[in-house]
Amino acid sequence: MKRLALVALLTAVPVAAQTALPPLAYTQLRDPDQERQARGLMETLRCVVCQGQSIADSDADMAGEMRALVRQRIASGEKPAAVRDWLIARYGDYVSYAPPLRAVTLPLWLAPLALLALGLWIARGSFRRR
Amino acid sequence: MKSGRMKRWLPLGIFALIVAVVAWGLWRPADRTVRSALVGRALPDFTLPAIAPGKPGLSSADFRQGKPRLLNVFASWCVPCIAEAPQLMTLKAAGIPIDAIAIKDTPGDIAAFLRRNGDPYARIGADAHSRVQLALGSSGVPETFVVDGTGVIRAQHVGDIRPEDVPELMQALAAAQ
Image (tube, rainbow over all chains, first blue to last red; front, side, top):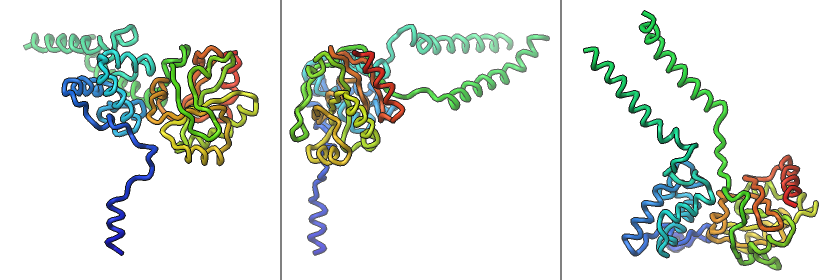
């Protein structure tokens, strides 16, 4: 009886098929070059439910669906930039970890340069004193 | 010696600035709601199969019949969807046509959900792999879109519809006439 229970436990299949993800969520593409493209894209797309994680890193169902979508589109010959644009058209720049250069994102791009300039200026001051 | 005194106070100034920035973030946290970028644009083309007995599936063409409709993105496994069910019934009673997209669902679960929480829907389309949800720029369940009679998305409500949200939705529907 105990053995029977163990066998039943080991062969049990999850009944809740509603959360089944499409195979491409966790399966790499056959073509290594396409998989590399898809991978690169997935690492720079934000998971929309687990903000702060890329869809490549996240285990959320939604991230799995997004990975499947990316792989499917890349496999059908779409360029990564086109897939990114498709998602940006739906979720806004927010969905991409590669922010475009726009008036709103200008501080984001200029702040590092400004801070670097400030650092150089401070360094120059302290070197001159010696 | 003026510049020397200024230099002495500079670290404190910077510290105060950092405290101010952090305090601002704590007291007024940024809005983290993910909104669809498709508001004001046409509903993307889709055709979804039926999932509930006796109820047709849903396609984007159903939203181009001249009258504004609500498009509710929901799932039987979603708890806030139960919370918003009475509000959807209120909207239905007010004569608002409501269609739905069921995310990752099964016919049995949908039937049980509708039996328990009421059935405000004219049509329900099954989106097994969130494809249409992604095409809509929707990031979760429940979400509700106000679609005008020409198939253009006019407003989006993210999260469950609370009783206090109903007038706002009615207003958006009236504006979409």
